Length: 548
Image 1 (cartoon, rainbow, N blue to C red):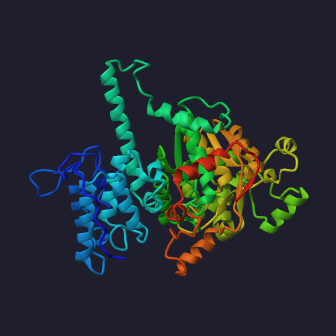
Image 2 (tube, helix red, strand yellow):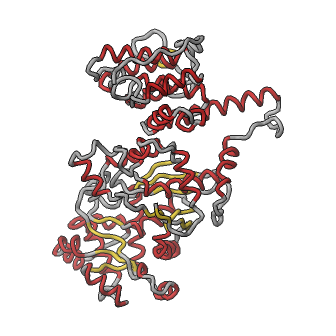
């Protein structure tokens, strides 16, 4: 596997290492090594102790790779480091001295990759990055999506694999925008009229809209150009998998179609299941998919606001505290019976709510929410701190008119909207002892973050009236819901808990195992990103479930 590559055909040099080019290879290496100082559209890097900056894409890439030996990008982790380093240098020389897109060069690459996963050695190296950068420059786009590699299946597989590695998709996206902007600037200068409709090339937004219109998906209700805001709200309890793809790509599709924004919000309301490592993993997965959200936020950013709105619901008779068991609640819901706590006085429910949230500190902390507890209420909270946490919850008090309007909808039978949990939260630590459910947090945060349209799997259609119920009750700006059809995957293991078991028991090398339905696994298996996105988005207009 460590055999040297076959010699490439002779060809004239195309560029020298000192050329100041767009930093393709340097940007990727910067991301992989965690250097993150190669930015902008010019390959220059200030180096401490050097009188002049380093210039040239390959020069900077070599420097960064050598500066991070733990990454193994220059063969440091191989059994024979000096031999692998020589192979890497040979591939880098080929990338610099031969036309990357010439049939002879592509044939040499394809033949070598028929029996190799990487160009040099048994792991990703600077050779892969350097050759990839040369291909991007020659093709003008990411080789993973280029039709020019159709006849070179091994090379195409290699390119698709690299696209799943953090740094490659992001860098090729930046390069594509760079050359588009350069072309537009050149065209405008040649016509001398930047606003000439005949001489002016299509803007990036116009080109994107034209490409997206091919799907002919239904328009958004009330959607206005430049004002649409969508959001993707994953729970940070696992890595993204194929079950998330449709929601993700539809949010992206409509944001781009209306020249709006897509937000990424972590729904971190259940500290028992959430880990910070999954937050980083989800962000990396989005980069692999070529998606850059306009902003990243957390539901926990709004906990104080959500608590204030919960107090408002209780004060106005639209929520109450309940200590019914889960079994009792289920029985009553099926029988259409009300809880015995439903008509408790708001003042008593507020005292219990503060006790559930803050325990013995309720008396001090309740004032921040416009609440005053009397001596009797304080004593009750002190005597029942453990019970309030473990046995009580806050339930929405859905009015009869709403229930009658949606007869048979059990989701409207006073759902739980706050429950206790003593597990320390990743961001707020032990500040709270109870957390809002998705049903309460989502409409509040959507409204406050400016979301205009919420994409929702139609399996949750019964919960849509509940989502809309909160807006008038809390005096919030309403948000439109756009349903989309569900994808059911058969013979596919989707459970995060079960996938985690495979990883933790070392039955697979990691979450990027090509047999996994995760983003990492699917892209590593070689699935083409553009084909995956087109397939998911094209079904957006259908209301029928699809089995795969």
